[in-house]
Length: 274
Image 1: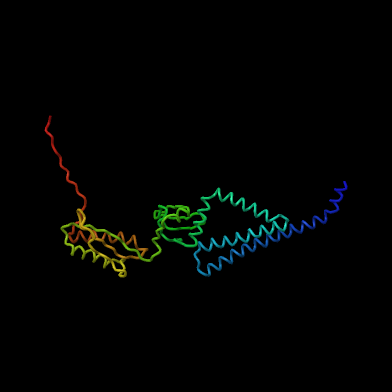
Image 2: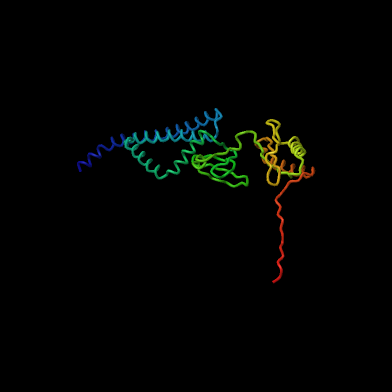
């Protein structure tokens, strides 16, 4: 009864003491959450003002928000009376256990950080990586979203993207078409070269600089192979490819220049009846 009476006597003092700590903890949490949003918005504005890529802006802004928020949680628990040193040790041990269990995800996270920092590709680039090809639609921390030309969505892990070779077809403004055109051995080479050159000269896609190339590249088994290498804008690559190939076929036919193709002679041997 005496102990109970003592507690009753101390109750107002305890309520005031711990109540104030809880109130201060709540105030710290509210202020910390507000400062987290301020840090995120401020980081976003500063990076956008410097015209940094949107992927980098989003990534760095989220990191700034997380750092301030974690600091807020630690400060709030310290105000209540929780031993933050022990808490940090527990969080570190838990983080190590989670890290060992999620090695694949962490490797994707690390690869995502590298992609954000070094930017081997950006949103809108057409790339080939990890055995797939498509237009980069979104780069997140763990994966990259690609859209194929036939409008399929491919989600590729960042580690797979960064561990292999990335071929970026959109980085440079110009690209070269590499066409191999085979003509008959009976064809006049000077006339053939003139026909191919006229097509490139009159094409709406072919650039004057760098200069194109039309030359005999190989005396193959059944044809003389010309290389036709015009330079075009990157955005015009496939339209130029299709149009120039069609024009070459039509022009060679009109000039009477043969394009050889595989042929097979079939002989039927009759056997005498038994």
